[in-house]
Amino acid sequence: MISTVLVANRGEIACRVFRTCRELGIATVAVYSDADASALHVREADAAVRLPGAAPGDTYLRGDLIVKAALAAGADAVHPGYGFLSENAAFAQEVADAGLVWIGPPPAAIEAMASKTRAKELMGLAPLGEVTEADLPVLVKAAAGGGGRGMRIVRSLDALAGELEAARAEALSAFGDGEVFVEPYVEAGRHVEVQILADTHGTVWALGTRDCSLQRRHQKVIEESPAPGLAPALVASLHEASVTAARAVGYVGAGTVEFLVSPAGTAHFLEMNTRLQVEHPVTEAVFGIDLVGLQIRVAEGEALPADPPAANGHAVEARLYAEDPARGWAPQTGTLRRLDVDPGVRLDTGYADGDTVGVHYDPMIAKVIAWAPTRQQAVRRLAHALRRARVHGPVTNRELLVRSLEHPDFASGQLDTGFYDRHLDGLTRPAPDAGLAAVAAALADAAARGGRFGGAWRNLPAQAQTKTWTDRSGGEHEVRYRPARGGGYTVEDMPGLRVLDTAPGRVVLETDGVVRAWDVTAYGATVHVEGPAGSHTLTARPRFPDPEDRTEPGSLLAPMPGTVVRLAEGIGEGSWVDKGQPLIWLEAMKMEHRIVSPASGTLTALHAVTGRQVEVGALLAVVDEAPAEATQEVTAS
Image 1 (cartoon, rainbow, N blue to C red):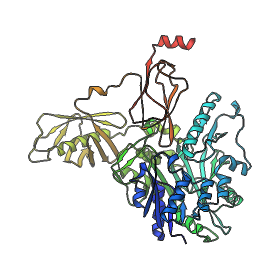
Image 2 (cartoon, rainbow, N blue to C red; image 1 turned 60 degrees about the vertical axis):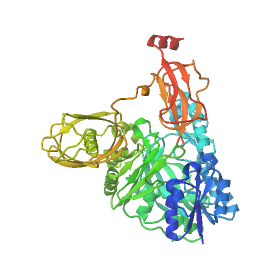
Image 3 (cartoon, rainbow, N blue to C red; image 1 turned 30 degrees about the vertical axis):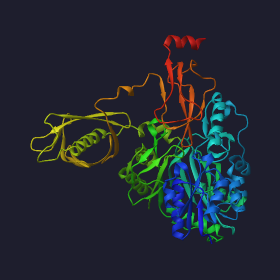
Image 4 (tube, one colour; image 1 turned 45 degrees about the vertical axis):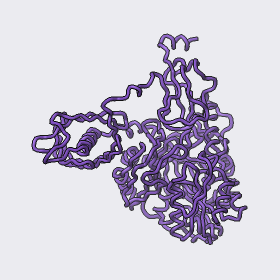
């Protein structure tokens, strides 16, 4: 029997494994980098061991350090979670050689399936060799790892070499393995997967299907089980192929077989993930099981029942990321001041109020999972919970998640991996009630500074007061208000609006005869306003802007905190650059981001240095835009 488990991972998955361990009476050990010294998974573990450093390559990717940590803490088993070393056969062997129980598949099974190229060969498939125009579009993928890192869609042969180089660099940084390969890219395909679970006695379960088609940068955003609208014959064939793949490599434990389903209903094998998946909670909800608990039981040698439990109902999961979908999905950092979600849904997170979302790791804050008897009910429950959630801190994709769940295509089950390519502009448009949110913020601010609804008034002169707010989409909202005769407030230029009540944390407004309350929480100049249609984050514009805040034209600023990983070859101060030319590559939260020239002209300043970490807004370079005539002359020559 296992008595103590070390989780060779961090954040949300470590906390999730610890939860099951506590229920089973198993002690827990965390490992942590310097950046994670005060992280939630460290606080929740019974013991913790430091891995010196912050970069994944120095910490969570160091299998030798993790094995030493397990032995030092007295653990007798290691759970790899997902990502990092979870699909590393050498690490699994290290664990076993140290006399520890590996809560995962045998190293030989990982070796056979962890490399996507070898997995395809096992399934009788092969990557593309020399790519021709007829093969386009193609997909460049990392042979190891997952999560969308080291993956690129290529639509022109001219771009292939550069995308291969970028994919190799990203894969090497994320997984310690720079091998990449090329395969055909299926347009408008659905990402469908099958959860499997196998024991050491020859039993293999196929636990339904999951649809994970809503993705950004090839990383999943919304997942559900079962995958809607699949023909029963297709589901049966996916189950059969998944079980066959597991048996072919002597698989043990939890794993996932992934497919891309074409619009015609043809399934193409993608890969087998020899680990637990981020989206495993939807399968747990539908089958009424604990996959982590079953992983532990299988590792202890228990036999599974011959047949899995019956599926029941529908579950949907949304990944809440610290990122800005309207600005190229740029990851965000900062203090997560509040995370409060309806207790009627499941919340898996590695953060608590007051924790910091840093630059070193994946920007996922939490997963929110809803179950209901039908898909329509589950989707509605999840959308409602997300809309009512309190998420105060960095910019997140919360509004995008709500709008995605409510989109007609999603509601009707019309899903494919191009969903966000088609609908992103509409899903990230400014909220229609931002003006009312600004009114609520201004009146709550007035109340906090001494204004009181009814009775006497303090510190509020009779003339109109003005408060200007900036929302996260860049829009400005000027609110002009004054105390009303007999108490209360009136708001100028908003006919049909009545102010019914004000307090520092709550404002009640009536618009067109409908009364609605707005909750207001201020953190200095930043205010979070929760209203009937969702949440708004507003920042008060200073009355006297700092003249030093002006930015020189042509400046390239860091859109997020990160590390400069490389510069375009041959560039330097005085170089000519073309509009749209990639100049600087930043790595933030395990993803690479290209900084391109905003115009054709001369690079008059280059402050970016390879290996240097930069903060958001840091000046990286300056391009002096050439006049149109000069640009034409240079282009012609």
